[in-house]
Length: 172
Image (tube, rainbow, N blue to C red; front, side, top):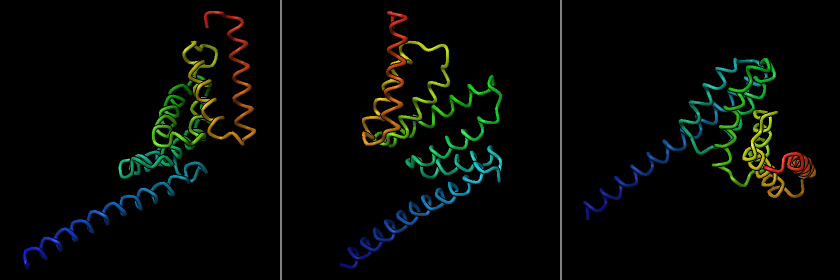
């Protein structure tokens, strides 16, 4: 009987410690997320904001809003960049949106912004595959948020644009 109580107490302590560590990592990741928001307003550097979010994602890699915040920081950064230097930043933004889609496949925001960034990245030199991927993401966003007039308009506009391109080039 005494051995059984010791085992139960030990299991309770191990479970409690595991739970406490888990809660602390989520809490610390959330605080780092909050601190990184200052990068959007220019209060801290973009690199500092991204490094805070890198630490946060190591602590809580299943939190999609961390990847969204990285995306938002890069949106504020890209406005300052010259046009020819933007491709690398767009590629990073695509990666963050892809990770958001992987973590929250039912959130239309990630699908919409993935398609918008893909469109900007491949402006003027799109392949049929890229066009189909963009349209697919626009469609997913519109289907996931059917009550949004904005999402529906963006999808319909891009569908019409793809149809015009297909009429000019029948290989698409």
